[in-house]
Image (cartoon, rainbow, N blue to C red; front, side, top):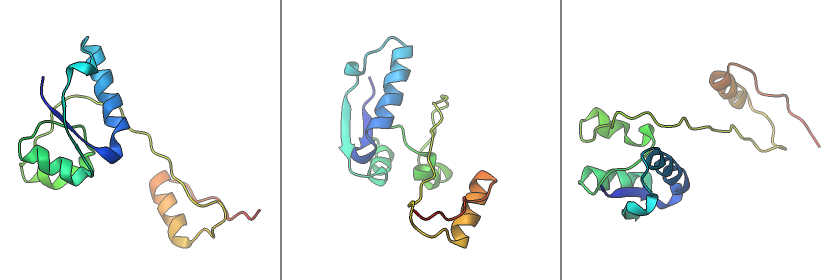
Length: 115
């Protein structure tokens, strides 16, 4: 089985996705050798570019390598990621924050609340 590289800081999500993909095919995660556990997405990208194996990684983390043709995406649908938009509950809502929230969600940021 091909070696798998992952970033230590992002260990849980890729392993969950990999486990689900393997389970679909009747393969146990114990049959996969995790060849490298690296500290950042950048080092994982560099390792895969050097031929160290395959990985599950954010498209944004490898956009330049994909565009340059140094890496290729494996055409396999993966589960969508869910993100939260967070803010400090007691900080003032800035105009920039309102604009950002509006851009991302199509709505306006909630008004400032004080407790």
